[in-house]
Image (cartoon, rainbow, N blue to C red; front, side, top):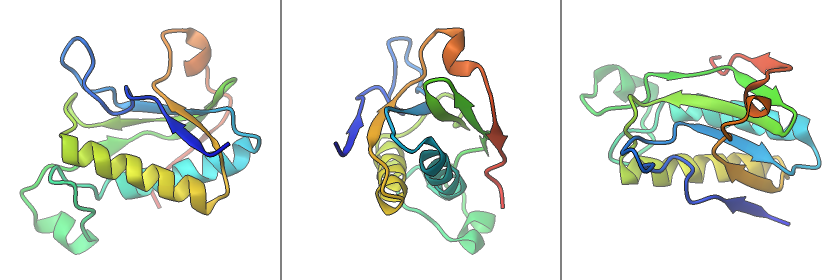
Length: 135
C-alpha cells in the first residue's frame, strides 16, 4: 500500500494557521506505527524553519525557529496521533522536512498507511494510550 499523505498535513488551513497534528490511519500494525511516530516526534524537535534537521548542539545555540513542544503519542480508535506545537506556523521548508522525517521513520518500521489531520470528531482525540516522545 505504501504511505499516502493528505495535503493538509502540517499545511496552512483556510484560517491561515498550520495544521499541527497528524494521525496515521489504516496501518495493519498500529504498534509499529506508534513507535515510528514516537521516533519522528523526537526528531521533529530538531527540524528548523529553514528545513534542516539540526544537531542538539546547534539546537541550543541557534536563532532558527524549531517546534516548541511535541505531545505524547496518543492512540485513538483510528490510529496513533501527535500534536507538534509550532505556534500555528510551519514554514514550507519545515513542513517538507517534517513530512520526510515521518515517512522515513514509517518506512524504516515497515509501516504503510495514510497520514491525515485528525478530524473534528472526538473519536480522533480519544486517547487510549500515550507515550512521551522525549527521550
